[in-house]
Image (cartoon, rainbow, N blue to C red; front, side, top):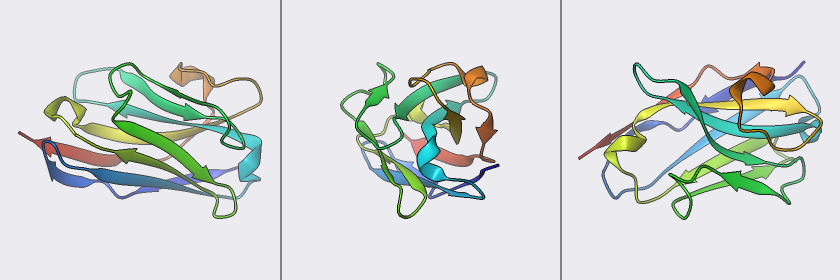
Length: 124
């Protein structure tokens, strides 16, 4: 069973960049499709980006296309989310999630493994 730990969140000004990371342990990382989700106060947990097991396929929410890039390094058991041109509305707790088998899914309930989250705050 895989355990996920996020890192790299923080405070950044609007228009700035930030990279968050998620490191896995306890499982075969390349077995998992990985996703990033985010949750703002009082809102649902929304899909941000997903990546296939070996990185060949990625998907993004429309709100982050062209600004965010998901990538993974299976040798380091880590998935990344590079965020550029950040906006105030990107402020949220960012979670990484993993699921086994099948395609990239944007529904949070489809992911069985979750990290504890990392706060990203964008000041305007």
